[in-house]
Length: 105
Image (cartoon, rainbow, N blue to C red; front, side, top):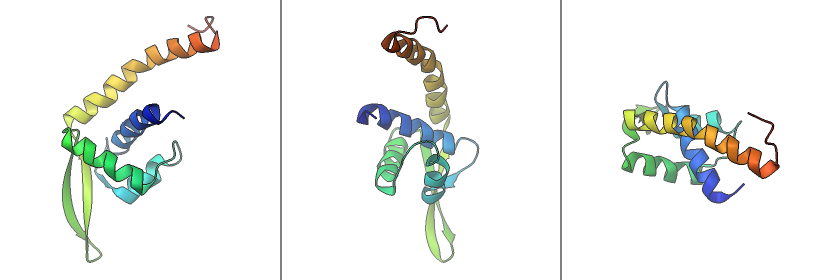
């Protein structure tokens, strides 16, 4: 898959993984991995970027004697998911064009 396309998809997948409840890195990877390949080395820069752009907030909490960072989606992050869903119609039209399938409405 194209790296830029995958980057955008991964960001939205990460946001979707935390849209109903806060989560932490390993759990996010577990939730997203069945749908698209993601590793720790990919996830944490995405989370940092989402935090810097105001799409997630964080808090730290002790878990088994260690600090664990939890990520929570913000309104801006929810809006990003909604924007992505709206863009799917355009993606579908482009897909039909590329595949020569104008019969799909």
